[in-house]
View (cartoon, helix red, strand yellow):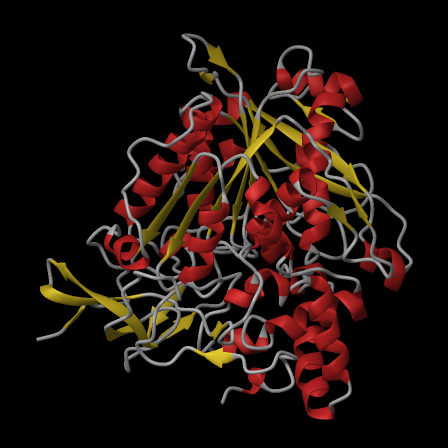
Length: 546
C-alpha cells in the first residue's frame, strides 16, 4: 500500500484505485479498459480508453487518473472536506510526530523554501537571457526589455509588431508573509510587465468594448526571457526515456517563452487588451519569495484595482513618456481609467494557482491561510472580473493528485506527500504554494471558466479537472489534448486549437452569452478523452491493441 495511506492520511479506510476500476466513481462512466506507455514527462504505463484512431480501431489513449477515492459509504464532499486547509494542517502536525515522515517531507519543504535559484544568479549572461533586472528601488522603466527586441533574428516573434501599443507598467505590492515574518523585510515589491492596448471586442450589441486578459505564466515563465528557436525543453535518450534539458542554456533563459508571447499576440489580434507580468521574485519583478501563490492571487486583485485607481502604478508609453498614479492609469487606458474594463484572469500551470486564489478571494471568501492566525473576510467582489482561463490547472486541489507520481514529483512536493507539503509550508514557512481544496470549494461561485490540459498532465488527475469544470455554473469549456503538462510541447495544431477555443470563450463571456459555441460535446470521461484530436505529443507513440 502506498505510504500516503498511512501517516499522511488521518482518514480511515481510504482506498486506492484498483486497476481498471471505475474511472471517476460516477454511475455510467466506463472504466479504463487498457494501458499504454507515455513518454515525456511520465515515461511509464498509464491507464486509458480503447478508442478508434488513425493508428488503429483499438488505440489505447492514456490519461492521468486519481490516486485516492472516498471510502465506501463516505458521506460528504470528500475532495473538499478531507483536503481543506485545516485538515492538511492536522496531517502535518501528525507527520511531525513521526521522525521518518517529518524528515522526508521537511526535505521537500526546505528544497523549495524562498528564495529560488534565480535570486542568487549573478552571471550577467544568464540574467540577460532571463530578462532579470538589476538593482532595487525605483528603476528607469526604459531599461526593461520591450516586445520590439523579439523582432530581430533569430526570434522573429509576432509580439514585436505590438511594440507601438505596449506600455511598460510597474505595480507596487507589500512584502509577503514569509518575507515579513521570517526575514523582517519591509520594502515594497515591484511587479512589472507589459500592457498591450487592444482595439476592442464585439460587445454582442453591435458595438465594441475594451476588455482585458491578465496573463500569469507558469513556474518557468518570464515574459521577457529569451528562447532560442533551436532549444527544446527535453531530449529523448537512446533508451527511449526523456530527460529535461538544463536552463539557462547558452542561448536561452528558458523554453516556451515565445509561445506565451504568441498567446498574448493572438488575444490582442482578437481585440483584447493584454497584461503580461512577471510574478514577484522572478524576471522583471522584484521580491525575495516567488512561491506564495495565495499572495500572488492578492497581487492580481490589486493589479486589476490599480489599473482603475492608479494606486502604486507607474507606466511608460511607447514614446517613453512616464507617469505615476491616476495619470499612469489614464495613460495606459487612453482615457479616464476610473470605470475600468471587464477582465478575465488567465493562468498557466503555477499561474492557475494565483488566478484560482484571486477568483476565490473575489467570489467566495478571502482567507489568510499564509498567516500565523487564519481569519476570513467576505469576498472582495470586484465586479469587473468576469471569469478565468486555466491551462494545465492545479486548482482542483490535492485530493486529485494522480496515481503513481514520479520521483521528481515527490522531490518537489507534487506527489503523494502533496497534502503534507501544503500543510508544512503554510505552518513552518508562512507560504501557500500548492492550493488546498479551498479553490475547488468555492469554484461554483465563479461566473465563467475555461480549462485546457494534456490528458496525462501530472498537475491534477483528469477527474479533478472534470470536477472543477462540473461545478462551474456559467459559461465553460474543457479542452483536452494528447500530451503532458507543458503547453510548449503540445502538438502545434493543438496549441492553435486551444488558442482559438480560449478566444472563443473570452468573446462569449464579453458578449454575455450563457454557453460557448463550437465546443466538442461530451458527457463522461471516455467521451471527453475521445474529444482529443488525433494528434500525439511526439515522445508518446500510439499503442494499438490487436
